[in-house]
Length: 341
Image (cartoon, rainbow, N blue to C red; front, side, top):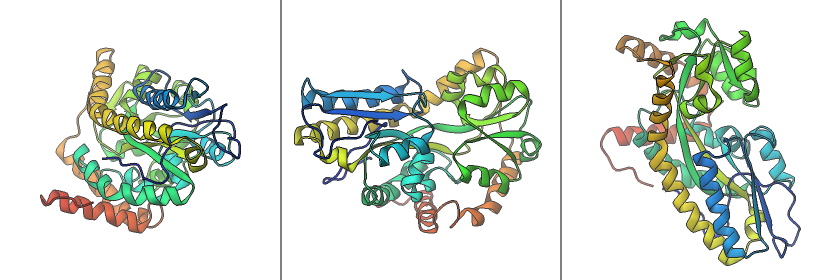
């Protein structure tokens, strides 16, 4: 699934503090950052990668992960890596796109993917290309992972596209592509920081939030937005990345330990993604969330809406070559052909 390039490979969830020019030595310390909640699965697997590195490097090594966005949003995190304040990060397409725009093909095309198997089919084609481009830009991919499907949480029942076009919908700060997408689909996006989502729902600044179920559960979005449309809008895709400088400053044994632990991390995230999604939905349903299925006629309306927007996305929001790679991979997969790497 997620192979790490032989020459330069390592990247994960943000590390802050510039590394010395000579690399990692006696005072080896890696600092990573991420928006994921402390104690979550994504935090835990990152810590496991860091612990494997620390054991290989010796008692003098230190590994720190800043969670919950304390180092800023994902664009801040990428900027901090570039200037040496962080060594790595676990970030989504929002942050990865600031490194290599082609990653948007994995997340910015609504309703393009129907299942995790289709996401995997496209990823098999895209990830080797993306890893090389990311490497060319000075970063190393440690492992990829998906965090669930974006679904729509709203304060009032909403099922059809027209229902949501009447609502004020949260859009991520620092992601102009998402704002552009929403406007292209006829929505009313309201740009906020993640910390402002709950207050925004409480005050009426926003009426709906497109977010994955596990994040909605952790942030208690469902306590105010008590309706969820059970639609697989887009998968949230991310990767643990690291600056090439930090990677090349590691010892050979440290690199080998990270490669091995990263392989396990990617496999664990892949195995847990659907269960984590469904468990979060079940937990919120148990405390009052109303889950709305998408009727067949409404599904057709959604598909037509995004189909009309795809030509606008291709070449602007998503690089044309990567857009085409995804479409071809899905065409092959759906035809029952083996997807070639």
